[in-house]
Amino acid sequence: MTRLELFYDVVFVFAFLNVTTLTSENLTGVALFEMFLVLALLWSCWSGFAALGNFVRADQAIMPAIGFGIMASIFVLALTTDVAFFDEPGGLDGPLVFATAYLLTWLIKIVTFWVGVRVLSRRRALLLTLPTTGGAVLILIAAVLPDMFFDGTVALGVRLGLWVVALSFEYAAALMLIRTEWQVRSAGHLAERHGLIVLVALGESVIALGLGAAERTGRPITWWAIYAAGVTLGIIFALWWLYFDTLALAMEQHLHGVRGAERIPLIRDVYTYLHLALIVGIIFFALGIKRMLARLTDPDVLASRDIFGGLELLSLYGGLVLYLLALVAMQWRMFHRLARRPLVAAGLLTVSAPALLSLPTLVDLTLIGVVFVVLALMQIGRDRQVRRRVRSLALEEQVALEDEANVFRGRRL
Image (cartoon, rainbow, N blue to C red; front, side):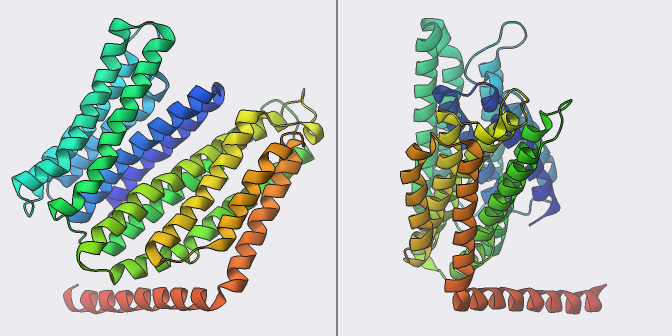
């Protein structure tokens, strides 16, 4: 992975944070659905650049300039997420600016695919890029046409419908990868890039926690707020542990051994589709904890007895359940092994959520913390041999690569 790709991902810190902050300010069922659509669109942008960086060096020749162009477009995209579905009076047309930035992002990547990726024939390149182009054009149409023929909620409904169709086009394009003879040159690069974006999302949840607590500016700090922040950090660490301690390493190691026609569908399912669910789960969880900390630091709210609202609880619990189910699905698709413990934890959270509506927020948070701490400890205890083997192999690989790099440097530098 190059430093340029790392720099590129910094833009997504702002993008994820902006989506969370804007949804938090006006939390409704429609806003949650809009948040999901924007996250799916951002993931499509990121996946395209990650795939391109796997095929050509992102820091060589003209690629840094291309990367800057994509970054600028993504930044405008993130800047206008609050007006992606409706326009504010005065200034530029928000949905049109958002859609234009998105279309420009894909046009830059498509031109790079056609010019730089010489191994693909024009017909195969067309199969790869046509659905994504069609999806971006539909987003542009959704920005313009609904307001010309409809008003208010009807226009919003039509726009959301066009977004669903557009994103369906784009994600269906991944089904055609096997027909394009697309190849993954470096499984290690692919795994590292996806691991980094998961870290970005987890980092965003920490920032969201801090922003929720920061709303106490001018208010006294309380033990309840400190307790809630500490428990939440423990949950975030458990989320990190469940993915990075063993699973991410094991998936990369398995992927290195997969060859032939099976490799691309496996990568598509695990890294494109299921990692989207992982990211969405983290961001929804971040939204929930931001709202939670903001309430617990409100002097007009009795923190020890405050009860979370339905949508806040849906975001908090729904995000965590989605994260756990994504982990289960990844292990099933990659290893054909059912991860029972995360599945049981997801079921426990789902079943208990309605009952917890009547409990104080701090009790809800404590119960979630207990579930995830127990889950992480059980993973260490029950999977000790697998964990030792996977991590030992990863360490051996790292040492071998460092030794080879030292030999090269001694000979050439």
